[in-house]
Amino acid sequence: MRTTTLGSKGPEAGVIGLGCMGMSFGYDMAAPRDDDTSIAVIRQALDLGATLIDTADVYGPYTNEELVGRALAGGHRERAVLATKVGLVVSDPTGGPDNSPLIVNDGRPERVRKSIDESLRRLGTDHVDLYQLHRVDPQVPIEETWGAMAETVAAGKARHIGLSEATVDDIKRAQAVHPVTSVQSEMSLWTRDALADVLPYCNEQGIAFLPFSPLGRGFLTGRSSSFDDLPEDDFRRRLPRFQQDALRTNLAIVGQVREIAERIGVTPAQVALAWVRAQGQYVIPIPGTKTPKYLADNVGAGDLELGAADLAELDALPAPEGGRYQ
Image (cartoon, rainbow, N blue to C red; front, side):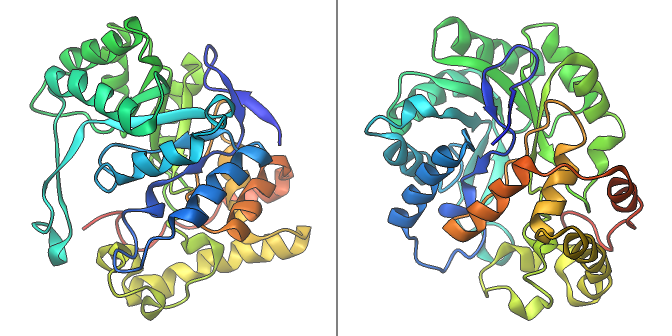
């Protein structure tokens, strides 16, 4: 796979990464976990050049970091650009919608200082390559949180630090304290908010941009055509875009992506990822999967260059029906 760097001053990584959340958290919560397959997928990702491995302490909570740590044991850690996050906590395991976990912000400096050590223990390493603030806590000045994040770099516990779902103002305030290596936000053919200002700012500043859900939470692959296709405990059943009426309208987007894929002889997932990749030199999408077949499909987008006409057609796709969240 082709490579880029994590921003203008970060480490080299494959142009497609791997998001590990869904291996233990977030989608079909009732489905049994298959940690052996997930570990094999993480190692396969490294073999294929998808070296940016992304997790977070809140995923599970905690169990996803432990899973990634087991996958990277035995000499695999050196091949990975390992990223984790801090700043969200599960305050009530069943206090959210439909008995889902209730997750709240916690950007207190003392939380950052404690959490980095706990994450390193679970991951089985002495440092992470990228430590990210999962969400900016509105109750804590970002300068205070970011200062604690910078301490992890000074202590050698993190090589670089990044933000997630941040505004341009957040990024600028953090930059005044310590360099921002990356910004992680949702971006895909049906979520383009970052194109307005955050991504242009990152491109201008040489900051890596790490799109999560670059396949529209799986929708852009074309594998789901009905609300009923989603498992009973899948949190996408609570998202406006996946409600049956909205989903029926949004299938037109998938249809156009599929037409382009068939025309150039690739899969819809590869078209969707290649469009995301085309948005900047340091854009590294991190699609999540726990299936070897889908991993290989995603990684195949790393060497796909879409033509100008295809990009223009994708740029012209309509906005989706429904918001990102309730």
